[in-house]
Length: 86
Image (tube, rainbow, N blue to C red; front, side, top):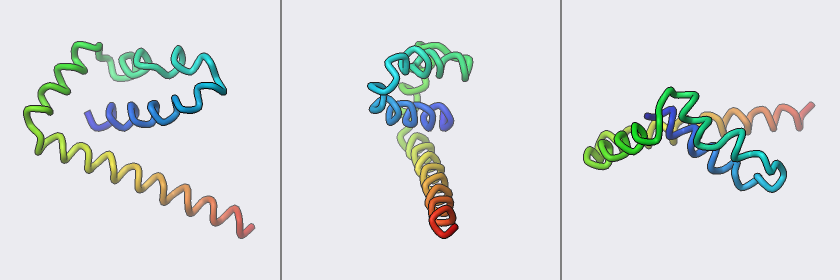
């Protein structure tokens, strides 16, 4: 569920740039998640319902997702600084 949530957030953020690529939803929409993780919309809803009833578990997942974003941000910051110094 962590990976699905991470990808869903990334896709949601990327959708703000969909004006640049009108085919974004077709390429990277929900169907992409379903295909990538071998799930369907019903399985996703059932997972969300399960975690809604188990908020401590869902909180752990969200914390892990936030850590991943922090790691990626830190990596991008380091890369940006190294490019600027060269």
